[in-house]
Each structure stands twice: as C-alpha cells, then as structure tokens.
Length: 194
Image 1 (cartoon, rainbow, N blue to C red):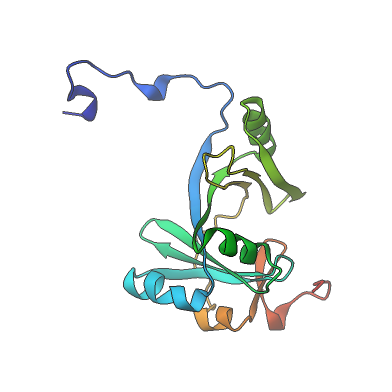
Image 2: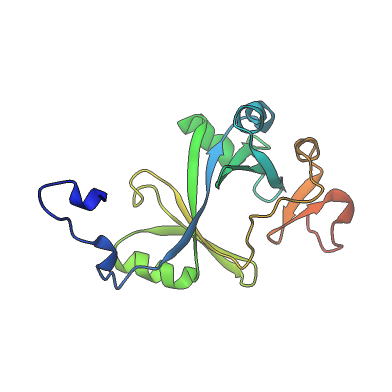
C-alpha cells in the first residue's frame, strides 16, 4: 500500500503535472552554514556526525574560508569569515551562526534565471563569467521564503574527496580557491592575483 492509497480518495499523481517554466534541478548539491570558527565546528561535523572532509580553502577575494564535509549522502559547507569586512562577518552579526544558503545544481543557469524571473522570483549576484567551470545566481531570501538559494551549473561533480588535503592544512590557510578550483599555496599559478 502506498501513501497515495491510505486516505478515502486517491490523490493526483503530481509527477505527471506539466510545469512549462521550470528548470529541472539535477540535485541538491549542499547546504551551507555560517560559523565564526570552522575549527570549533569540526568536532560536530567530523567527529560526532562522522563526516568526511571533501575539500576546502580560502577565497581571498571574498575573505572567507570554507570546508565541505560529506555526511551520509549529502554535503555540508561550513563558511567562516576571514576579516571584519567580509560579507559573512556582517551576516553572522545580523543573523547569528547557522543556515546560510542551499545550493541547487541545474543544467543551464541562464534558462533557470529566465524561468525564475518569468515566475516572479528575484535573482541577484549572478556570475556567468566562468563559462566552463562554474556559473551561479542566487534567489534573494525575500523571493526564497526566507532562504538564500544558490543555483549553479558546473560540469564538475564535486563529489570526490580531495586526495591529499587535510583539515589542518585548510585551517592554516594553505589551500586557496581560485577559478573554481582549490590550489595548495605552493602550487599557485603565476597569474594568481592575490
């Protein structure tokens, strides 16, 4: 017996309803939380929950540090501000530590933007500059029912654990994000701008 036959009347099969202006979500990629200190969050996500470090690093342009842990079949991104003028510092001061955003993966960010705006949802902070590796936009919390929703298109799976990275190296600032990739500080390309 399925849940559709438990009641007095049959429920409609919502999977067959046609939604012409909807970009299909390939997956919920991750949930991100904002914390004052990643080092303080590691005992919960790694030790208590048994999370596996996937990757992480410092984004000097945004002045944030991030790590991603895999828990069961989902990923949690933990974000920490690196300076008082980081957008994340302001976020934590206004909202406290906790949920920051949810990331949904799609095939085509441009189509998704069109679908969302046609349906009346406001998108912000769109970045389509990295056409080959990562394109993104965000649904503003006022349009996302209080949630910041990141929508991304990327050919990279992001489901593989980095083969050599350790949490200690990330916490020491040895890994850096640049051009949608993590780089060890000793291996940065010559044109790294920071």
